[in-house]
Image (cartoon, rainbow, N blue to C red):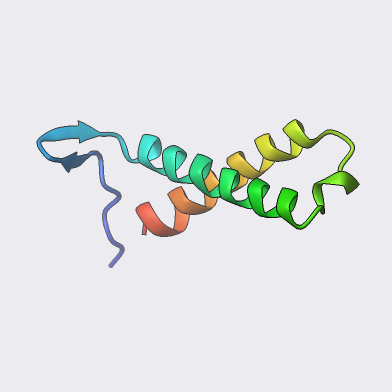
Length: 71
């Protein structure tokens, strides 16, 4: 039997959609990754760094939403 997908999460009495929570965690993970790439000077190999950051935000949001929150 599969686990049901949560329709909403209650945090301190406030109902939050699971995709919003995944997006917040995805943005934080992408910002952390971008900061680590900048510190290691690896972001200079990217043609357009803001587009790479946006792509990382989308990828992290999908992965977090699928595997952690949708669980």
